Length: 74
Image 1 (tube, helix red, strand yellow):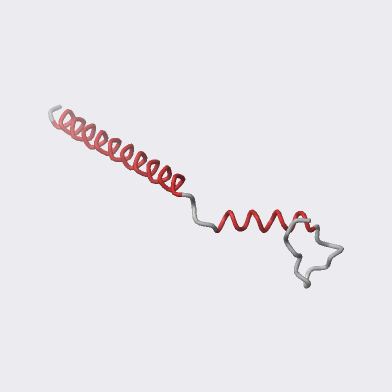
Image 2 (cartoon, rainbow, N blue to C red):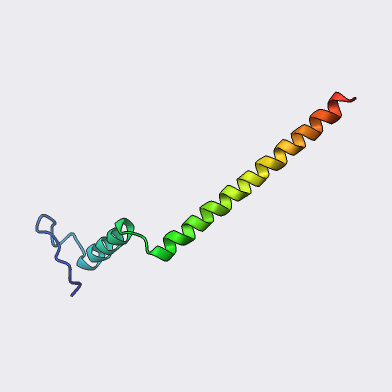
């Protein structure tokens, strides 16, 4: 019915074959290689995050320099 045989070491009365097949399907999806387009999208997100962090860091450095200059002249 599901195309998956429940191993003999499981108690057939305790294991639902449909749930077991669903679990195997999810396990295969979890451990399989990601499709190329998903990997590319993940790479783009990482690059966007890096740019955001970098620009935030630059802004913080500029703010720190301006604050340092204004407090030293007072």
